[in-house]
Figure (cartoon, rainbow, N blue to C red):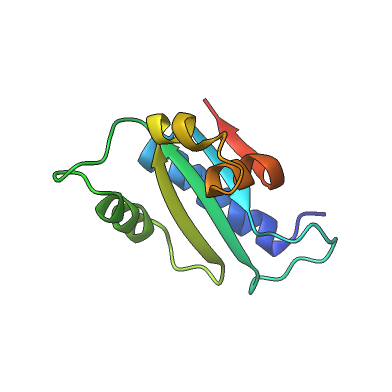
Length: 110
């Protein structure tokens, strides 16, 4: 049986795929226990194409994505990296990207 959290998370991920056209989305932070609650915090690491610069900042892109998501009772943090940043930092063991690959779950990959 699918929990409410699973349904909300699946809808959020589907919307992010349509809006951001990401290369990859990695989910972190959701406990692996069998019990899911909507007050759990989920972190979605989103690998986006292109680059961030003065015309397209990481912050502005995150705000754009957040604004396009409905207001769910789901605490979901969006953390964005470019494909270049992902490739550069994936081998740094203390970087969030390496942690996501080690401990997270890839929920979408192009």
